[in-house]
Amino acid sequence: MSALTFELKGKPDQRLDLSPLIPAKLNDLKPKDIEALAIGTTRVKLSVGDAFKVKGNDAGSLRFVGTDGRCDKIGAGLTEGEIVVEGDAGAYLGDAMKGGKIEVKGGAGVLAGASMSGGSITIAGDAGERAAGIAVGETLGMRGGQLTINGNAGPLLGERMRRGFVIVGGNAGDYAGGRMVAGTILFKRGVGRYAGFGLRRGSLIFIEAPKDLLPTFCDCGVMEFDYLRILDRWLRTTGQHVGLGDRARRLMGDMAALGKGEMLIVA
Image (cartoon, rainbow, N blue to C red; front, side, top):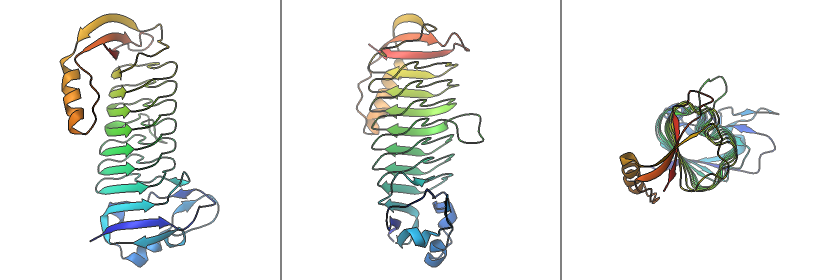
């Protein structure tokens, strides 16, 4: 069996809602039924067959080829299976997903991994603002799973994040970890202003020291952390070679909020 493949016929002149195209919704459908599925748009009605060439037959493994930033909600609500995007993804990539795996070989739009509670998303390029943030109608951001952004991340990364793990290979924008409730974000490079604004609990781990630290964080000095060494060992099993060591400067805060969160700046 070969992966069920959706190849974009041409650049869309309107936004496409691809949330119906996940393994759980396609498993029992014949090719002609898949091509007849309506995909939400902003201008005129459109079916899958109008926008995509459909090939393959393994609905447990999906491929999107040639997609761009107007292809929204890829993998939204995903519970099982694997999705590979050979191109860019639009807004709401993996929105509220509960399981499975998404790999994007390009970049992603706003709210990637919004309110996801399980599974994993890997983005080779950049991600827009509010990645791992709050999906529409939800009160919390990411609640589980893993989000890896190998490029840059926009502002408000991890807003109201409740659980899970995020790793950013490039730079992150302003308000990274803003109003986080819990969870862990690892920054390999720099961050913008106001990192950890309103942080209640959770950990922000920095390889490079932030240039702009909020005054509402208390410096506790350099300490040893066994879990940094354990985290580094686990990251190596996933192909991420970070070199965290076991020593970091710890800052507690945000004292303007609950104040039980922490920033760890690797020493």
